[in-house]
Image (tube, rainbow, N blue to C red; front, side):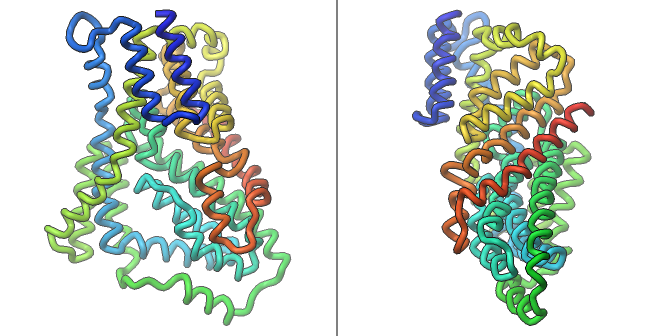
Length: 421
């Protein structure tokens, strides 16, 4: 098994390096490791390659499908557009330019949380320009918008690392998403307060100027009442709290959306199926990561890591998980690539300290990665790098420096929360 563990270690290093395709490396490396460990392709006593792969077909995949069906119909009937425009309106009323920038980031994170595609440039095209006109420093506006990645990854349902963490700990979606949303919104709030304090020094704009900007960025082609667009989300949240199957809750919320928007059955069904089309990447990633996780467990690698770090894990299991996940994401600058470190360590913690809270471990593993991935550069290929081009006058280094205190605030909050599980 030692050779198998070495090969798996090389696989994890390749994933961390970012020089090879992430999910393909996980799958191929895990398969080679399983072969070296002597696992049969199928049947026989003990684990086989087939059983390990089938173990990756976790029920969490059905949860993703249910949520994506719901989002598919919400998006196509125009409910999401109305919600986003209202978020922007609330942001402006609460905090002027700082509020608009924050609302734009929250709206982008909200979209990413539900669709699996967090791209703050989508809203920054509108709210970045609006916040700049309202007196916000363009670079700092870009920094606030790019906090969307925290919300999309940590509060969402489809990021591969988040899905793998949920599946491995066996907690299911629900409370981890609540923690993710609250921590992410706290990060936004931290930057919002700093930005609002700064813009207050520049003096207020006239009502005419503010109203002109509002008309440009807050109007929607859809005329739904805001309460109507929020009703399906209320159904979804109640289902989460009650512990009902998320796939069923997602379908029920989709039906509520269909009735409230007066959309015909056939169109609504097509919208729902189009939404499920987004499951491709998280589906492959989930199966790949869970296959890798099963191989790591069955070759004894999780036990080896647990034995190596046992003194630290037995004293502070959740805090250790948070630190390792944060460092992994800080080094790789990718929540996805950080899974090569955080997933084996999560398994090691669960092995060494079986009484540790599964929800607590999941929150620390997912949260540390989601927060710290943007610390060094704001995201080398996504997030901040995509926002800078759409906000005139913004500069990446200044924007990233503005983000960092809020990220550290998020980590401090996670550390504080870790003592309550």
